[in-house]
Length: 233
Figure 1 (cartoon, rainbow, N blue to C red):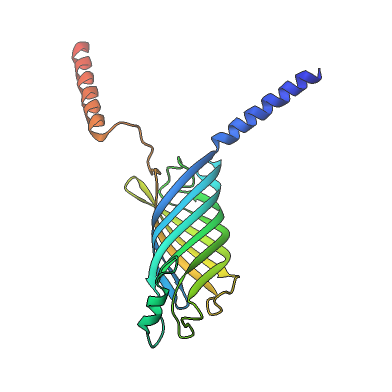
Figure 2 (cartoon, helix red, strand yellow):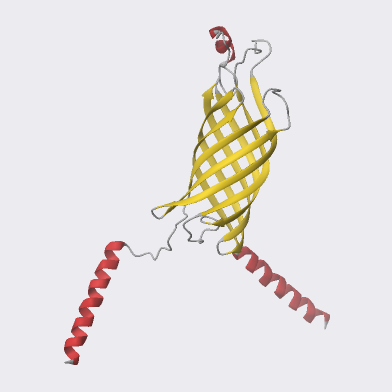
């Protein structure tokens, strides 16, 4: 008797896990962007995001994402620039002017790109997470002994606007990180934007038939209809 209930429980658990697995998907996006803070700004030449989705509906999801950025920007904000300082610091692991970042976010996604099969023209996302950014710069208070590192870590608010371009999906991403580390007292937070391509996401459901093949098939159907009408006369 108990074995029967145990078997039923195991079967229900298996069906539940299988149903949940069908709602889980992985999405990726890549592009370029920029970052802006007090006396620290530049371009993110590499902006990559991987996202683990849990589908709520065919066009909405909750996701856990990870983001990596690498960029280069203006690094010398001193009134009197001293070439010697730049030479002494250029062998740092990140190099003068280079910056990198890593972050993780929990987001609610809707519409376009919310799931791999949403097939919507427009959509977006709102999320919160933790972001870390580091780089190099020179300011008036910087000396060759004091160093020139920039380090920011803190709570991050993230928003996205997803839009179509033909049958592909793109995202405009805006993000603000409030710095809690205070390694650089003059930097309270950092704002970043990005233009991302959502890899493998389509606006219209694909049928696997090319436009040329579809035209040939339509022509064949018209010809078959004509022949059928002639036979009926």
